Amino acid sequence: MADDLKRASRSGLGGVKVSFEFFPPKTAEMDAQLWEAITRLAPLRPKFISITYGAGGSTRERTHATVARIVKETMIRPAAHLTCVAASRAEVDAVIRGYWNAGVRHIVALRGDPAGGLGSTFEPHPEGYATSTDLVAGIRRVADFDITVSAYPEKHPESATIDADIDVLKAKIDAGANRAITQFFFDNAHYFRFIDRARARGVTIPIIPGIVPVQNFRQTSSFAAKTGASIPAWLARRFEGLDDDPATRRLIAAAVAAEQVIDLVDHGVTDLHFYTMNKADLVFAICHLLGVRAPVGEGVAS
Ligand code: FAD
Image (cartoon, rainbow, N blue to C red; front, side, top):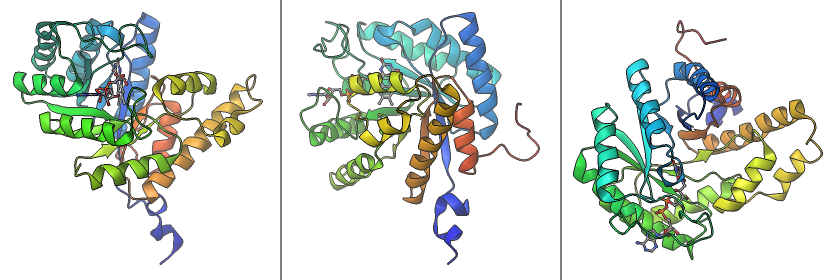
């Protein structure tokens, strides 16, 4: 068989499907940037686009307004993130009902980070949902949503072991979750090992790899340190000496992300979730590389 048919990333037979994550904008300028990114990526027909929920519910209104606008103005299915930090069950249930009434049918359900910041202990609201599992069950009680949850290939920072995290994932599935998206990672071996362990423990739902194109290496490294994602030495070396050279950094970022997603697709991965940071270009290019394109005749925003 010719080499280009043996590799899914080259044959175009991988049938790659994508989803994109955005955060809700704070200012009019950020709003314009977000919609520019959505407009550029929408023709690629993502399975869904998801909108994050700020720490402690700080973006409650903005997340709602953004998903409601996506429902009204686009053909894409939005997924609204939701956490249970610093809110009673009644307040969280009101947000869930608000999403449903706005036409949203998909929630990404998360516990959220401790109100005291990463590294402190998570204290549930006295009348709130105590865990992400409780939240998933709560969402199921309100309406028949599609529910996505998180998974951590390198384990959640508060977790003792990866197997403990897989037990939590199983509990979330038993409560009603139908898919997981992973925390980002750079070494695909972490993802493959996690999938093997989760499947061996009876997890059958899709576990979609979360891909973060490195728009800014310093920012990504500091975020990775907080979330428990490791930065391999080879990755740091690739960005070494480029602090004052954004143009080369962008090219390296594209090469790094391309290498990662091509390897995933060649290993049989068909769904990819991109953390876009509300910027389209890099993600658009990676999708193009994988054969994820706008249907002919639909044109692409310039
Ligand atoms: P969980 O699966 O709830 O796990 C959290 C920790 O609690 C783990 O250590 C787990 O082992 C432990 N645990 C859970 N249940 C139990 C139990 N019953 N007994 C003992 N231990 C338990 N944060 C935001 O604020 N807004 C967002 O929009 C957002 N989106 C995200 C999207 C994705 C795809 C991912 C991967 C993360 C996102 N986060 C977001 C970050 C997330 O809120 C934090 O990582 C948070 O610390 C954990 O919440 P969780 O639901 O991901 O984890």
